[in-house]
Length: 159
Length: 159
DNA sequence: GGAAAAGCGTTATATTATAACATTCAACAG
DNA sequence: CTGTTGAATGTTATAATATAACGCTTTTCC
Ligand SMILES: [Zn+2]
Ligand SMILES: [Zn+2]
Ligand SMILES: [Zn+2]
Ligand SMILES: [Zn+2]
Image 1 (spheres, rainbow over the protein chains, first blue to last red):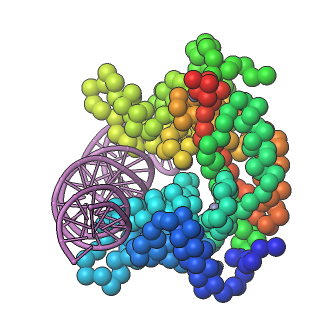
Image 2 (image 1 turned 180 degrees about the horizontal axis):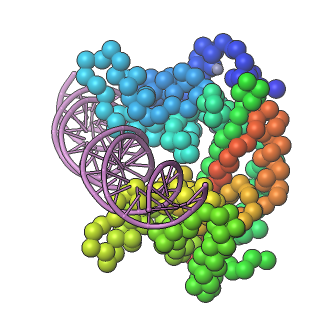
């Protein structure tokens, strides 16, 4: 049972707070720097359970600033966060989403609702096993798995 | 046992010929038009078992022509071929590859070698089942699965 | 044959991402 | 402290991928 069901009401402030806290601890333990900018970008990524585009983040970063931020600012922060496993890239929609369990290494697997855009990251041993089995049958060594399932979430399929 | 092993020598002319023949039959049976341009693009996609970028196709289309082809020419042909299931898009690398079994509906799953770029499309009931199980556990209805596994193929892992 | 739709050419532009170099900041040794 | 070094960020420009919009041509079908 997960700590929240993003398809229902929940206190999302907790999600944000938890994600930021975990990120801080994780970076501290790895002795790397979660700078204010990186933390800010992570916070913006976590504004919802919907994937967010790099240029959306850029626009939000720029809000209220005198000079607009530039693309490399965002992409560098995202690169850092992705390297640390704090953020995933959803290549099928060119968007980014916070990782729900950054402390444990995993192949990411996402359920992306095409209607409400809510996206959840799932971990399912059966998927991992079937992929590994299949790859090894072909003598293939998986380095990086991208599994993105688009469709309708519980909420949207009934509406 | 598959009709060829793309990691070893094989007569790739057969692959191209078979793919084009199957495409013609399939379009005929669906009563849709595989125009010369579309067929040409499909042929270019099938030039190898490596994914190919839209602008690479564009460049090859332009070879020997007086006026260079424009992006919409290629993208429209690719859109058509994808709608008909003759070509898949690999979003993790922004590239396109011919479908190895376009006549039967399937979720695409690819093993993409990061070294030699050879890519094979696999069908494995266990993967389909585990994905379906997992999605339905979350009340999610899969409309479109994108599974792209990057890593080392048999050949490259030993070299 | 003529209307309607599909296909394609063409021009322009949107969207996503990176290269390259300058400047500032943080860490650390001496 | 201070000077040195590498990391982080700012800044400008550009690359790479993809689509919008409009008009002409070809095919389909009555
Ligand atoms: Zn939440
Ligand atoms: Zn994750
Ligand atoms: Zn296929
Ligand atoms: Zn290889």
